[in-house]
Image (tube, helix red, strand yellow):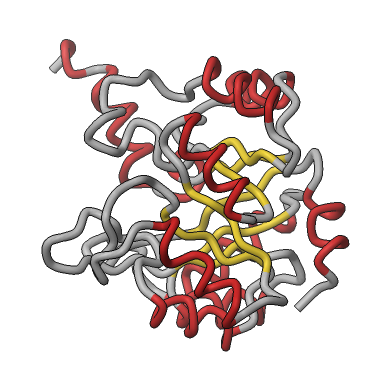
Length: 232
């Protein structure tokens, strides 16, 4: 694991590429994600965001870049699925990711607790780990900063029930967070073009994550197909 200060220095002003494929997607494979990450590194990406211990372990064999690690797992009776319990935190910590990202929304977690209740326990158990707060609103990011998260992201804006109407990327939200945050702000969610990426960086973010537009060919193909549906 890298020195904590060096991690944020190394990703500042660079692109983080999210290399993920869920079990129902054609590219679901640690081997493929490892190659995807290597392609991103060769294109001068500054970091990787990845899901699952298996994928992360393979990615680490292929790249020497900071990794934001998550584990997506659906639990019954909870909408929180990004690193939702202490079990997933422990697995990522044992794997040795640079930053652990977890849902930091106001929603109740699978264990019945809120992020305000569980995060102090997480910090106490793994005090030397860096943590990223995946948030959906300005209020959630400010709360996460108060709780002691090392960086905050707009990952879940547009994906919680109370932000579904938001257009992505949410430039107004990003700008407001940057203005009031004293920790690194990571723009994530709906960044689909290089122009949009430039826009979020112009707002003063520390770094930004792009996933679907780079590493999910099925979704990329759908965009092109949808553009010509009127012609066939």
